[in-house]
Amino acid sequence: MMAKLFRAVIMGPPGSGKGTISERIAQSFGLKHLSSGDFLRENIAANTEAGVLAKTYIERGLMVPDHVMTRLLLPRLEEMTRHSWLMDGFPCTLAQAKALNSTCDLDLVISLNIPYETLKDRLSDRWIHPASGRVYNMGFNPPHVQGRDDLSGEPLIQHDNDQPEALVARLRHYKDVAKPVIDLYKSKGILHMFSGTETDRIWPYINSLLSTKIPSRPETDTQHIPLP
Ligand SMILES: Nc1nc2c(ncn2[C@@H]2O[C@H](COP(=O)(O)OP(=O)(O)OP(=O)(O)O)[C@@H](O)[C@H]2O)c(=O)[nH]1
Ligand SMILES: Nc1ncnc2c1ncn2[C@@H]1O[C@H](COP(=O)(O)OP(=O)(O)O)[C@@H](O)[C@H]1O
Image 1 (cartoon, rainbow, N blue to C red):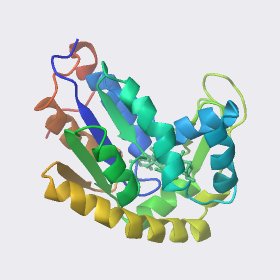
Image 2 (image 1 turned 180 degrees about the vertical axis):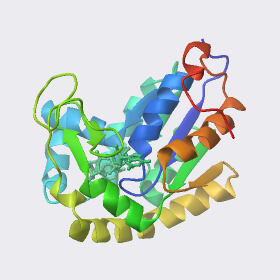
Image 3 (image 1 turned 90 degrees about the horizontal axis):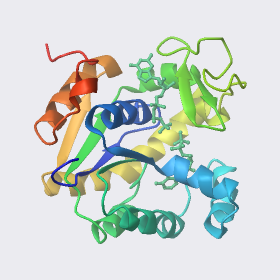
């Protein structure tokens, strides 16, 4: 049981490894990994009012409007009074960051800074299991059986918006909307930026930073590469 609750956000462009790194953080430090994309998919599957609305945007490759995102996510975060969490994919815009600010005090923000060429290579090779959101990469973490999810054996798919043409537009959009959010967290003194081309090289630095802030879980700690 952690002594103090810990609230963190991970930001970065599409394909920067937020999901991958969030899973490692959740495993090593026991934070609950919350993902805006997963919340949206759950709401779409459950046909909630917000889910039905969100679907119309996601299907067109657009971001879901701020008021829908905040209406969906803030009550869920408010319920999590007894958990430490790491939020992945929210906030994306300054309006979302301000809304989050009024609900809780963040302890830390991780921002991933990954070169465009790397993002392009990774995403053109990303395969997804739609039902669970599990993510594979044919070079980095391939499935045991090509084209099949490891746990369910169901087929994997690729997203059209992971292809290079769509990616350029998504990255430009990310840069525009994320800049004021990054500036806000910088001014609060809670932003930590990590740059690099490989998750395995960035991870030890994130692990080390978090170890100074939260006690790690001894049973999983040894699985990860120590700092050089
Ligand atoms: N080659 C390579 N692939 C990686 C590395 N880290 C993550 N990946 C893969 O790159 C892709 C993107 O990683 P994700 O963790 O899904 O990135 P994300 O930031 O959550 O992406 P979005 O959900 O689009 O915002 C996935 O296919 C990962 O398996 C790495 O260091 N090298
Ligand atoms: N914070 C957010 N604000 C607005 N829309 C969002 C947000 N998070 C997720 N979405 C929407 O949900 C979709 C799926 O999100 P996600 O699973 O994180 O994957 P990706 O960013 O790779 O498309 C996004 O493409 C976007 O339309």
